[in-house]
Amino acid sequence: MGVVLDIRPFTDTLFMHGEASSSSAFSLAGHVNVSITPTRSFFNRSRPTTRLLLQSLIITFEGQSEVITPVTGYAPVRLCSVSQDLVHGDPIELSNEGLEYSDSPCSWNVVFDIRVPGWLPLTSTYGDVDFEEAGTRYALYATATYVYLEDDASSFSWLNFCAPLCPRFRTVDAPKCPVTLRRTIEPPAGPSGSFPLAMYIVDTQKELNDTREGSTTASLDVLGKIEVVACVPTAVSVDETSLPFTLRLRAKDLTESERERLRLTEFSVDINQVEVYRNTANEEYANGFPIPSQRHQPPNEPLRSHHPVHTLCAVDAFQTSQPPRSSVARTFSLLAENNSGRYVIGGDGRIFANTSDPVISLEWYILDIDVPIAAEPSEVDWAGPRMRRMTESSPLFSVRHTLSVSIQCAYDLAEQAPLHRQLHFSLPLQQVHLSEPPRPPLSTGCHVSGTSSGETRLETSFGQSLPAYSQLFHPNGERKIDFSTPLPLYTPPTSQSPDPSAGPQKDEGS
Image 1 (cartoon, helix red, strand yellow):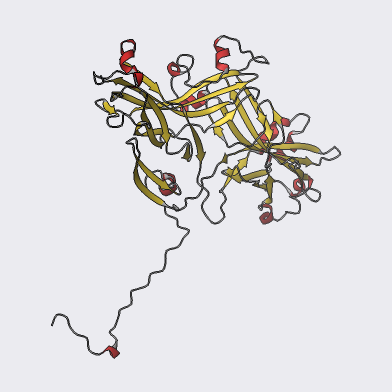
Image 2: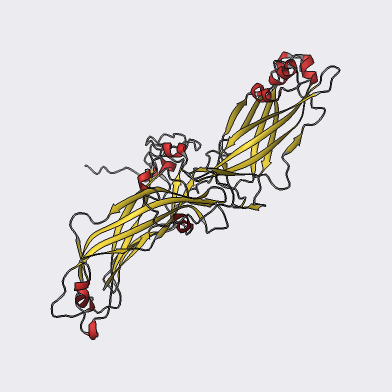
């Protein structure tokens, strides 16, 4: 007889809702199947009853990140390690008594429920495509420790024959069970279905101070008085094909003559994705989230399932193709391939002219555009296709997005060539995955089924999982109320008068 373990989570994908937070956690449940497999007895004699004591059954949820680049080389980090011993108190006796001659194994399901930290980064693949895929991964591991009890002395099996050569306590490991972590946020509420706009006030004087060479202070001060306010959504779904952008301009502190000389000829926008790869854990990330200490990091404590290149690094046989650095970045545009991001302002560009009226001069010149985003990557480099990712952060890999804006300004000078300056600034963007709206279950049911091996299994079927806690309750525990649906108007109950045609009513109490 042999003992076999099999990890069976209720789902192999865990959806983590909301922003990464060290104060939140999510449940990953399932069971570990413990089986005693049948074997033939020595010389085909009668098989003895197998009895064993299960001393411990430890299940571990572990996460890791590995990165490989031509510049930083190979770097690993352990993200978390959460363990549970499913045998509480005294050891558990397992036996195949009554089923010694069955060809099916005797099985027991031991239920687990692991508290997965809510700050963990999502499952992701990144790094040098010339090597086997690396990135952020998670998996479940299980180890059982047991001891065989003595069988019937009258029987003789391989177990009795090899008993003097075998250790008393034995261990068995379950095959690794990969788990995928996905991070989503709730869709925006309201009929528009879009995220609210975030407003940014641009310090134009600061941006123009970088280009004062060969210019008069007076002319640059005029350009620095332009008020610029930019609006972008607080978040953008990775499935969206465009980004709404609003630019507001005003020059209320300029004289009428200065407005006549000032021209804004064009502006351009670009959506940039910046990926940063590191060979040491990001200090800011390590200070914000409780990753394991250096004592539990490689090489002090190796990863359970490391990348094959780890073997080369252990003997210093892995060399980078370029001089090593601590980090390397990959930056590219997410604009559609046929879009330059350049927009020309119509007319002569004097958008602030003819506003001598003080009231009119306080009004904003507004530009509204939808910036198209590429649906598919068009270029490939050392890190693979330049695909669109969600904004994320981890110890060795991070992705951020920015909207870069450039405004071309010109100021006409007396008897001199016009002064041309570029006002450039960047706004932060957040690319997210949206949660699917909860749907009612198609069918629910529960029944208990038995097998010939004596295994009892509780089977439950659901058409759709329950909605996330954050979709039903606020962080302080108060229930969320959808105020967009008005309550019905109050109508007083109608008093029922007796029907005169029915004749006199009989009093039951008389």
